[in-house]
Amino acid sequence: MPHVNAKVSAVAATGMSAVPAAAAPPSPRRWEGVDPALERMVLRACLDQAPERRRVREAFKDVQLSIDHCLFKAQYSDIGTKESYERNSRGVEIFSKCWFPENHRMKAIVCLCHGYGDTCTFFLDGIARKIASAGYGVFALDYPGFGLSEGLHGYIPSFDTLVDDVAEHFAKIKGNPEYRDLPSFLFGQSMGGAVALKIHFKQPKDWNGAILVAPMCKISDDVVPAWPVQQVLIFMAKLLPKEKLVPQKDLAELAFREKEKQEQDKPRLRTALEMLRTTQEIESRLQEVSLPIIILHGEADLVTDPGVSKDLYEKAKTSDKTLRLYKDGYHAILEGEPDEGIFKVLDDIISWLDQHSAKEIPSS
Image (cartoon, rainbow, N blue to C red; front, side):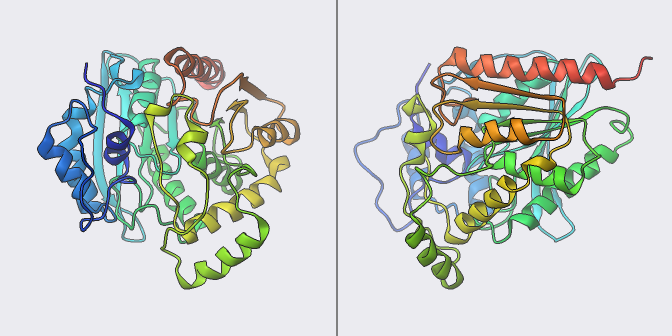
């Protein structure tokens, strides 16, 4: 099976590592198993806007199936999928995807909130298929500016607006008569953990539980710039909000224990500021978390602070709470760990869902 390295994986997922059109493609070739013409097209693409991201994704779909990663290699039977585009109430065209068991009863619905630099169509697809194979309907969307949804790539002018967009999309799913009587769970990974918690704060009674994987309750001190630099960046964000000028360590090196599995790009100034403000808010509101939760975090995470996940577990006012810490696990415990580690986390998630769905499903 051909191995496709981190750069092409990141391009296919989000466009983060594509070079501007004016830049010369690197040489020699590094993407084993990729057609040279496709490689040149991807390298020369400017993926700031959705049309080009969609074009690259369409060209790359077949290659993705041959990537040497356990999330792509795993095979599950009787899983249906559906992709769609729909304009939300703000007029932004949103890409969404769902995965569902085809030949047996759906136990519950799981609404996925992806992390920074992720998308419905890459690693999340493999995660969703695994959960759907256990009997769950899984629903996700690409945030505005991410993946295949409209918007400048990776640009979050307002985190609250992003949360409103996600909550609006999930409300439509939960309001569907086909799913209305099923238990519903939030699933948030990394930045998506912050999205999920903010949705819970807005809708404290509307969800049956939440799965929080390395949630962005606080960005690690190893990643956040020093205080004087933060003040400069806050000022610059007012002048150049869309520029990628945030100094930081290599997030891929910090997030992925298996280095060949991913790489990342610098966030835009306004995006970085919004994420920092959001984590500060969430860290101050941990005691408001009132729904059943499972928190899963790598003990060696240097991107989001596992210490704050411990604080969340201790301070959350819900009595139904579980904390799973994975020894030596990095930030990307569902993508960047050895295969057995990835499936251990997925099995823990499904086991928790099974326990909590059984409590909620009415007897027939």
